[in-house]
Length: 375
Image (cartoon, rainbow, N blue to C red; front, top):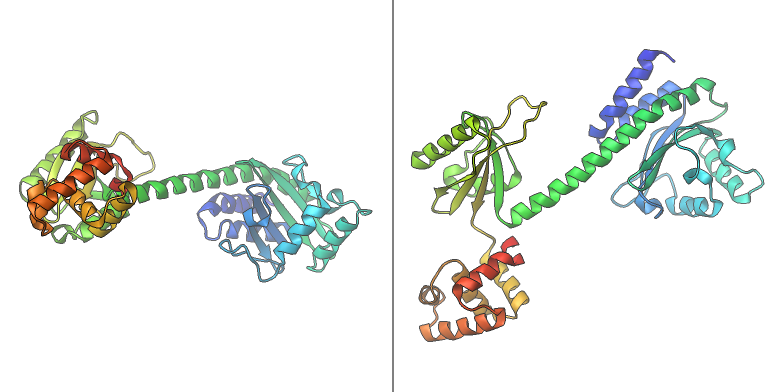
């Protein structure tokens, strides 16, 4: 096999973690390089069966699996999993990095092994060569090449052996990317529930990037719905001056403490600016500051329902409690909710008793410390 062809396979392997579906180009190139009819990469995250398996393949016998439903139009996965479980093929116990032929995995006298071979031959796979990937996050992986009619020449086994360390790196990279993606998604949901968002600035005050939370806040704020990447933050007056001064200070001294500033009264929006300590070597523009923006919270009706659930408040008590936690006095909350002062005071006593608080300040503290702040 020519070095250039091997390099093409390796390049596609390392780039495959950014494809959808993963490694489609790599599998196609590997199939061509090995002169195989079929190539598959199976990642089994646990021993829980095909419901926890990712199958990627290329070739005339490919059976693409819908990863949402784990079903395939060309393969009865339930039957195959049952067959593999009963046949007890030793694919979990063989040494990683060494190519194994189908004959080395099969015991001819075992009726279920023979049934598995028949299963493959029904799909025109007479010969197969596979290599096990090292343990991945507690799971196993296999890459297999198969074809009909004739066995693979020796260079295919050598190719899989050379491919093995690169495959381990690529799978580890994918595991890391997926773990970080999951963490980012969870953090993004928390930020959204807290009604926060973030954006980064360069030294001139231009927006480099922002998350979906910030985009949503700006979209709902008419005076700031023009915020765009590559543009100066569209703020005017003292707020803009303060923001640019903060960014310039952070550019000069990244050890400064964060600074808060108010952006807009209606709807309420404020920002905590902070220096960016991380310096990436791969970015064209390095951010010097990050702005954490915060606006109005979730709908009052939703927050009232949560208060009722958490503290066994009535709807009227929950509405009053929510108004009080927004900084309104009992008299102001009573007027807003069309309650008499006496009724509001009675409600407030019941609220304090049910929430085990000793006054409005204590009630606000409790609300900020509870999951209500996430709604």
